[in-house]
Length: 348
Length: 167
Image 1 (cartoon, chains in turn cyan, blue):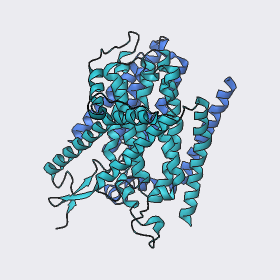
Image 2: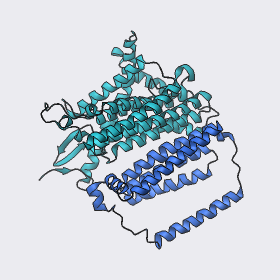
Image 3: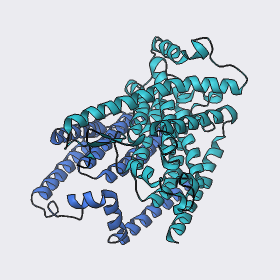
Image 4: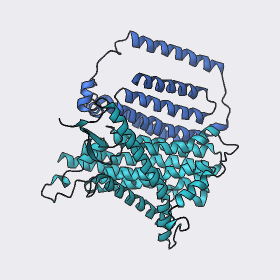
């Protein structure tokens, strides 16, 4: 008997059990990574600025995320009197949920066979995978906008408005850059994308077999634009205008305290992890690599996160008009050009 | 199970739809509208149309709603009291009843409801929804597709011209 794909119709009990295990495992790993991303960021930036970062809580400050979490948890939760309460409470949730939902479609390993069934190492394989990511990124903006508007404070409102304009501009460029990837792979599913990147490089079979057809080699321009657009979409330096500390206090998060403030931080790091995973899957072959599937993608994700932190430690914030200029007048034409050139090469 | 889920989604969609018209604050009704669009996207998924669902979210819930909130913030409608006129409410109710009757008539009597398109279940399983949609858009419906895109271009140019005049 050839093993068939595990689905709700052929083994309902096992399907539900496997699904629960996968969801809990992925969610647990992501939450743990969110907590330790804060530690990693403080340590890394500390060392880059010839400081030590957190050292007092536990060995090498390893218990710092727990201490921070406890502290924020026991802080008083203040809702400003003039705030629009419903939106004020809703906003942090609307930021965290889309970020965590997106992780469901990232494949994190090759299929395994369990009790005669094929179990894909991915929570859900949508056949419009990458569009789902874009849709969730679009929903994630609401958190920032609502937080800015509902706080009823000028700094927060400025942060919210900046974020809206920024995300609209950069979402366009990111979406168009991905089109070139679809043209090469012919599929929208993340699983299909990973499979498409496992062939020999550029279809040349005489190359050594360990060089795989990762899209970073055939689409270097798309890779660069997508990474920069991702930085802009998750409001990381040098595009962290919505929360620019020097001018807007803390931007959209100014009026927030306690766990709601912590949720904004969680959302920021969750977005960072998700986008690192998306970039790895789109351009770097996903779980493809020399080690076991999960290890490969974790290495790629952690490398990208360190790259983002490195940028934060070394780059100044761009000015607002520079941001808009970069998005509309450089990235979008380049993305269009990339599509045309890719189409030309496919026709050849 | 699917019916139950559909009923739940439909209930939430109608509920947030009512919120859109009854909320006093325009931003709150915008949030309710996002929720309605999200529920509609879920309905598309239930109908085996994941591409439509994703596009629905990206286009409506994403871009247009962001723009709505953007406009609301710039115009600062949030503090202005909404003028209530009984004429508008009565007219709206009348239109809603008319459209409701029309929809019911189309569902029961019209020929549109039981036409079979190319999106049959077997075709969906063989090609996938996105491929089917793309094929018909770029072959059979190429002209309407291009005409629509030119229409949108005209709208964009018009918007820029109008906005520039006021600046």
